[in-house]
Structures are given as C-alpha cells and as structure tokens.
Image (tube, rainbow, N blue to C red; front, side):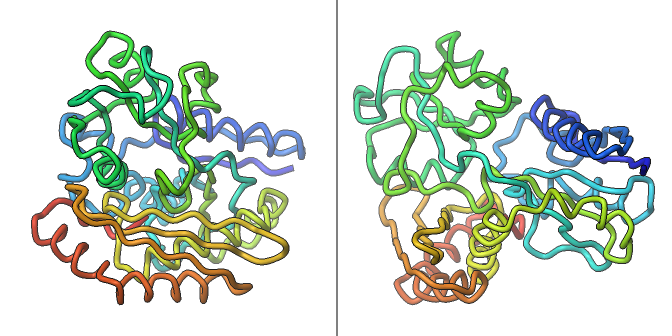
Length: 311
C-alpha cells in the first residue's frame, strides 16, 4: 500500500477530479491526500483567459511542486496541460474520457439556433467565440469567468441569454440539468483533451507510475495524444481558436479539427483517419496550415489575444 500526495487546483471541479483519482487509488488499497495549489489562472479571475497569455496558467505552480517532490502526482484537466511537458515530468495516465463535447445552456432557449438577434452569450474561450460567430455573427459574446456554479448562477440571474460550457464539467458536478443542447463537432469542435484527466508524475518515479498504470485508458490516451499532436503542430495554446476531436471508429482514429478567426469571418476545417495518433495529428495540423490556418493564428498572436503554448 502506498501513501501518495496529490496536487490539485482548489476549484470545485478540480477537487472533484482529484478526489475521483483518490477514490480510485483507495479502491486499490492506496492512501492519498490532496494538496491544494493556487495557480496563476486562479489568481487572475477578472480578465478573459484569452487576454492573459501565460503558458501553463493552470498548471505551472502544480508542476513546480511535483518537480520539488512536495507532491507525488498532479491531476489536471488535460485540456489545460501544455503539450510541452517540463523536463523530468511525464503524463503517467490519461483516464477514461468523459463526454468531450461542448453544450448550450439557456433558461429560455432550447438550441443555439433559437437565440434571438443580438442575444448575449457568455464564454471566455476564443475557440468557442470564433465558432459561435461563424454560425451566428449577430450574437454578442461576453466574457464569462468563474467556477461552474458561478457561471450557471450568472446565467440564471439573467446576465446572459445563454452560455457555452463543457459537458464533462457539468456532468461531474451534477449540474447536467442546465444542458439544453449537446453541440456536435460540426457546430462546436471542442478543445484538445477536453473531457479527459491527465495524471502527471516525475519521469524517474517508477514506483508511483506503477501504482497509476491501472488508470491509463488506451482509447483516451490515443485520442488525446492525436489532438495534442495537432495542437503542438499548430503552435497553439489553450486559449487560441483551435478545436480538435479524435474518435475511434472501426479500429481507426478519426480526427476532425478547426481553426477559426475570433470574429467569425473565416473557419478552416480538416479531417482525416489514421492508425498512428501523433502522425495523424501532425498531418491534419499541416493541412490546416496549408489551407490558411497559419495566417489566422498569426493574426491572433499579433493582437496579443492569447499565447499560452498549449492545450
């Protein structure tokens, strides 16, 4: 039996995730305690994420604690974890993936298409903003920060006509009753790694890695590796207008990805199938770049809108 220290952010969702891993470890006879670590992203709560531009804004301080051996493992939302893992660290496990899609939430309207002209939609994600603007350039997009309960409360208090959230977060916190529409990738391509948890450890810690092996889900590892390879090829961060969703279909990986102008003036889409996750991600990334994705992303970076290098 091992005694393990888990590093986590202190948000409601992050603690659910850390406690989920702790419970699974407990079922294997291991004891684990959770250490809450405040990250840069937690400290900057009044600015839209796309304007912060800090690499690893939700992971850096946790990874420092891991390197310094103050914790034994870190639990992250994989979409927040940069594709460039610091030297000496590794992703020991990618857990079974929850629903990776985004969802439409509104007290009055059943679908995104039903929103009236100039309706107020809340999101702090450039990726979501860009794809909404492609479909509905008339809508007003407003920043939305805070934990899941805070975002839902702002919706219920009438600050917004609708908000867009990740299905996985709402499901994990028991708030799925607010979901009105699950958005298909053709409408809203999700963030790379969305719905999966990444468990990070020190690369040389073979003992802890062995304890975590049972958490690693092959399908989740393959699909998220594919999405993250695409993201890395595009040089994108977690707050750039890039969407990616890989799924296993008939034994092959199918990857669909988009790059979109934040104002909704242009969206580039590419999809492909393959068996090698990294190669597939890189190939689709190259296709997007050839079709004009590089120019869109360069404009985003030049505007200072967002440059956390990843996911």
